[in-house]
Image 1 (cartoon, helix red, strand yellow):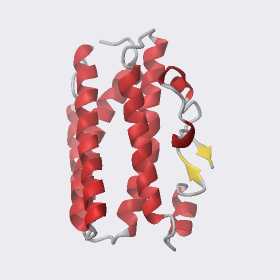
Image 2 (cartoon, rainbow, N blue to C red; image 1 turned 180 degrees about the vertical axis):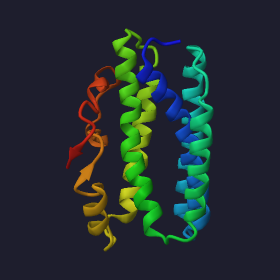
Image 3 (cartoon, rainbow, N blue to C red; image 1 turned 90 degrees about the vertical axis):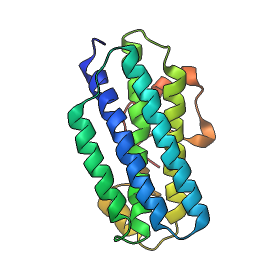
Image 4 (cartoon, one colour; image 1 turned 135 degrees about the vertical axis):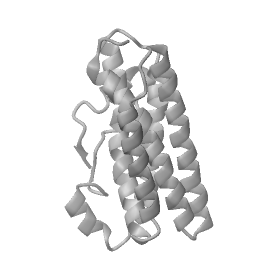
Length: 191
């Protein structure tokens, strides 16, 4: 087992939270009528299942057990969010998915930083790919709602949107993998 309790917990939480996200996107995709949106959200769901599988490989390498608590907690959360997509309208599932993805970006870069503190660099590539993929998800969801009249209100209330994000990754000016551990040092960037 890794001698880094915060990293171990982050891996366990990320593994289970990816299931919650995938469940949420199942409901989200089913609730939208637009076929292009449906297809994009289904792809994001697939990405989340892939991330879960990759995190599990890392956990297994270090004999980190799956947290039963996180599995139950995030299973319930994911199912509730999935069902709510049918009753809360079109805007809110896109908004909250983008906000969630914005925070998830740093999860993977923090893992990389924690591994580096243990002098482990073998997971850099996959953690980088997952962090960048989460940023792509964030950008997708924001682009769907960026001109919606509700965005300024939600942005003011929930601190995410066109004016602010929970990470400092810029897809137009990406750092290469070997410099990407400098991402998410402060977790919040106003743009």
